Length: 208
Image (spheres, helix red, strand yellow):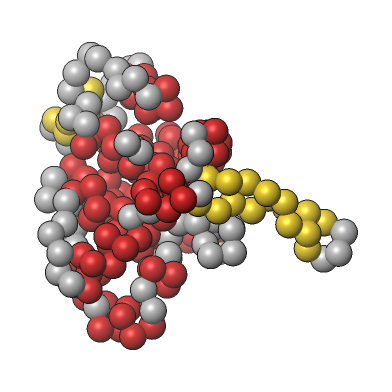
């Protein structure tokens, strides 16, 4: 069974074999969501702390969990997201490579501008079965039941502007408000989403 970050990476793979630009920068935040869903983290006095001393068995999640546990003082979600931001691309590449190694993604080369080549990635039949795209479409368009995991995936797709790929123009227009309202029930997951949006907005403002 794939983790939330792995499903997120498959979801945000475009039709031409390229990942959208928002994949890597959200990796740490969605890893935090996975740890919350696994009951590994809890919010106490507005600080994120380890809910248990045991590890997950996933070496990437455990790297993030170890970093949180080794902080001298418990940090707020926003602080942990800021601290983990620089590690997000590395974790993204590790998850992507794991999906390739486990047979969920294929990797090949394509040429562009005659002289250059770049990697392209496509879900294998096994990976396509794990793609949450159709489940998210059903949740939004058919009002299917929605778990916290699915709502987190949908909201991170919005953050990365991948709803333009998941839904066509008319679907986005008809469901503009509904897309914003499908949120996880867990308040900690809601806080991670809110703080991730705030951090990315601050980074964009600083760069402009």
